[in-house]
Length: 201
Image (cartoon, rainbow, N blue to C red; front, side):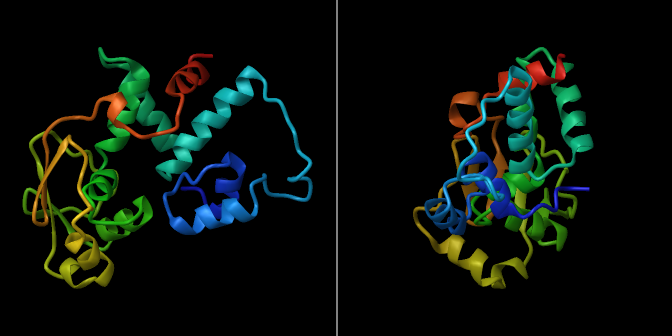
């Protein structure tokens, strides 16, 4: 099961808008401290293990994955020749819901997951409704005819400043995964080495 904890509480816990929704920026400006009765007074210093755990939980929450899903991706990353931390991020970014989000078809990762779940997304013209589907280099992501009628999607497609990152090539409502992103291209406030250290204990 994915986390069901209130997203506002997670945002305050990590002191960062990890979900990208503007409403959480407003929440953080009003309550820039952890949730709970002692949130304002809490000044905890984390142990090395605590820092590793928190970084892992933050990244897992960003992509809204269960511990089992996250650990599976980590094990896959570890088996490759590439640096484990960077490969883990690439595997997360090649999930179908992440590609839909980065393509500019949805305003948040949660919205992208909903588009996929509702059958509005195609991969090489075939409808795929599995958010965790791993998109391969060269595959083309598209939207169903019904998706164009969703006001939020239509607005995003019409926005001139809504451009995908360099590893994706978009033409109208079709996006091709040209390559996997490099670490320096990912605007993620994550210390992935701490996550590697957590699982290497």
